[in-house]
Length: 105
Image 1: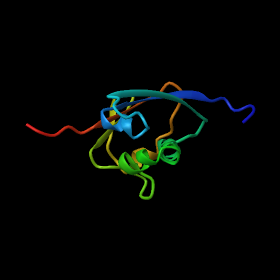
Image 2: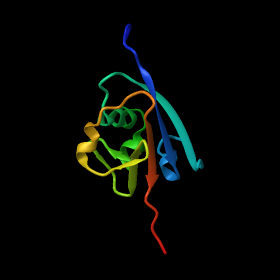
Image 3: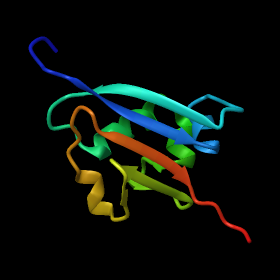
């Protein structure tokens, strides 16, 4: 990719979502990955699901292109709730947070 200016997106995974990336027993994991201009959230999630099968099963269902139930995804502190959010274009410096929904009383 010579000549392509790629900047990093930071992703933080909490609780069991960190385990979906092979970090069993970790309560928090932060990754930084480069994204090319025009990369969408869907493209990044597809890439992660291809690299990490548990992520593709437990966090992001690659077959249906949907965040699984039980996960709230934030981009720069704002919750992404709709399927259209997957078409959001990412840029260097963005922060994605994967937070499991906590239930109970």
